[in-house]
Image (cartoon, rainbow, N blue to C red; front, side, top):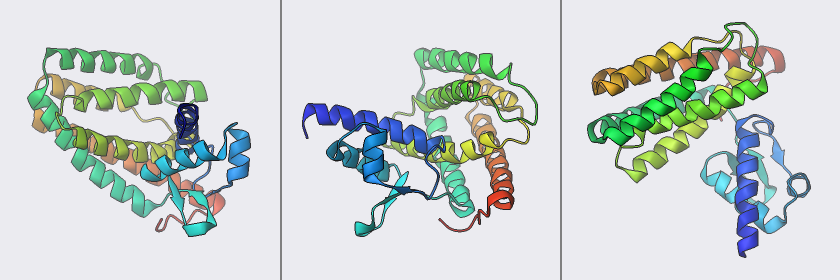
Amino acid sequence: MSSSDKTLADRTYRQLRGDIVNGRLAAGSKLKLEGLAQDYAVGMSPLREALARLMGDLLVVSEGQRGFWVAPLSLDELDDVSRVRALIETEALNAAIRNGDAEWEREVTAAFEALAAVEEHLPHTSDALPPEQLETWEARNRAFHAALVSAAGSPMLIKLRDLLYQQSERYRRVSLNVSRGWRNVHDEHRAIYDATMQRNALRACRMTELHLARTAQEVRKAMAALAQDDGFTGGKA
């Protein structure tokens, strides 16, 4: 692959990934190569490279010669992703608390303060967040959770954690896009941050587990609501 094709593949990968995670490309939908090439202004070679990377991220699936689909969502997978993410995230957080230095603390604090600046002004209503506000919160939430584990000292652990976060984000978007009310996640993030800064690994990990469990519960409610609206079954992926 030429350098220009590699650049196009990277760009297309990021665009497709964003559209899948955001739900613009619906779970379970067929990905028609000709249409994608036109929509994303890209040739077949970089497009196929982008799709191959997305398969590695578990966001796209392929069935032999039948083509590509956006990976489906299901309650079974939600439970599995949530359980395994809690295991990996707390392992990484525990290691980061043990290994982290003063620079790590400054990075975590900066990420928390940036997130808090958004969360303290979120509306506590039954309406879904406006798209621009949602994107800002998502970016800062992602940065905060990444900063917490950044000193874990294990590239493989971080890679697994990032993959699971990405899967969780897909499911969380379902909840945020059909929100019946915005829960006060700021207090949950504050509890995780405070315990981390105190180097209380046991409490930090416990607060993380509770935070992830509450998020999974919210997603389950949202998926149940969608099931009533459009026939989503919530079965196996």
